[in-house]
Amino acid sequence: MSLIRTPFGFTSTAADVTAGVDLTGLRVIVTGASSGIGAETARALTATGAEVTLAVRDIAAGARVARDVAASTGGTAPHVARLDLSDLASIAAFTSSWEGPLHVLVNNAGVMACPERYTERGWEWQFAVNHLGHFALTTRLRAALAAGGAARIVMVSSAGHQASPVVFDDVNFAFRPYDRRLAYGQSKTANILFAVAATRRWSRDGITANAVMPGAVYTNILRHMGGDSAGKIPAELIKTVEQGAATSILLATSPLLEGVGGRYFADCNEAETVDRRTGTLQGVAHYALDPDGAERLWTLSEKLLGT
Figure 1 (cartoon, rainbow, N blue to C red):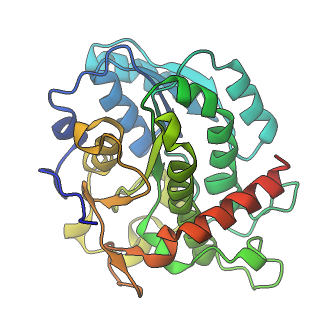
Figure 2 (tube, one colour; figure 1 turned 90 degrees about the vertical axis):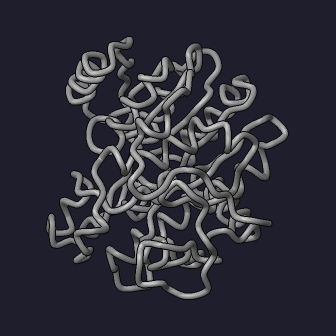
């Protein structure tokens, strides 16, 4: 199976990718859209004419973004709805209030390399927010996605997934010493595996899912990583927020990705599979695309969530 190549690349922006794209009449949800790449993703999608909902923890911050998006695009202000991915009751309230079809779901929200922390159910915080929260949200929205006819799910992952596979026997670090980078890597691998499993399970409903590495962008997600010292990434590899949103927008909107799912993209192109850590921002680990691992994670997630 050949890798998908597009006319876009590292320096492409969200505006470049959406040039000529018209999503008028389509409905979109972007999680974590109160700042950073999420806000820029919402801006680019609003500019295409889509009806966008910002799913955010901080309603006031979301409202500010909505006003800014409307002013900068000349489009209708996005809707703002509260969603806390660490709280199953919040997820249930959000999904229960959703009515009608959903055409694009961008699972952008996340936490990165935070200090050791656990939910009330004992789930490691990064796995809980980055994976389980989005798993619960997306599975509860399946009917709405199916009603969309040819819905797309975008999972914002990271090259950090190369730090760790999903350690199925100890996802919550009950036995291993806690390592925030390994925990982050595990959760980002889970995002990719979800895209693999969701496509396999739901493609008959016209639903496809892909994962994306947005690139190195200095946003609020780096607050636990020491700001500009995070990862000591060379300056030439740093992207603007507009460039960082481009690959998510490509997966959400491009006709080139019609019917494509279960893959991982970086710099607006499908990434090569690798068998060892690359030491760069390129490549997708073979274990992150393993269909058996994807099914095992799905089963584990359902068990943890009691679904």
